Length: 224
Picture 1 (cartoon, one colour):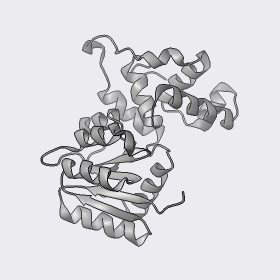
Picture 2 (tube, rainbow, N blue to C red):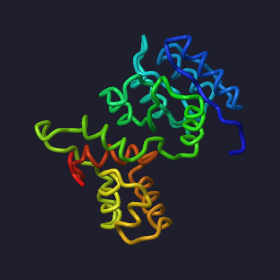
Picture 3 (cartoon, helix red, strand yellow):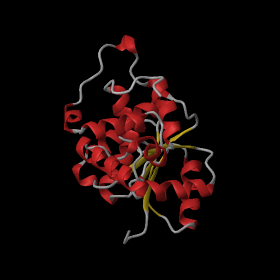
Picture 4 (cartoon, rainbow, N blue to C red):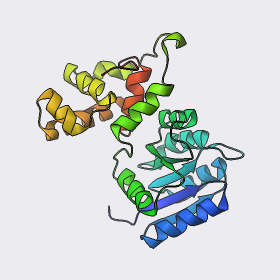
């Protein structure tokens, strides 16, 4: 990347914002704005065009889920990514935020090293969460059998048979290396398949691919 990493911190607790800002600044990360609620976060994202928004879920005026939707729906947002801040990882609100387009989540007691590594990784377009963690979260909160038929997704028909196979396995928690071993392919070939899947489905990263696979019924909770 040609410019310094640019981040917005959105949290209604001033101490959280201050602590995160000091940690990031010490590592050369530019904090372009702070926000005390979701509405401020949306405005700040439009104004400063950050690479990453650290977004609390529960905030006054507008919560982090709606703010995430609005930021990522803005065509001018470009490559902006959202990381959710939470106190509890297996949280329905976290799942809803991932479904809204967030690229992962961080616990608020994250270590300084992990915080910097997370925003750096997500900026590159990679999903923050390990596939197994994503699967555990999605399985708990994705559509259940009694919730009615899965919602169709028109873009699934664009995938080749091999890409559907890769998507199914990706959604069960396999890494690229594990996918390569399972399918007897090179890791580079698997990476190409994953990139094509994301492009065809209009998804930002693997997190959204996992959510989509469960919500469309391509994969069912408990699948291996």
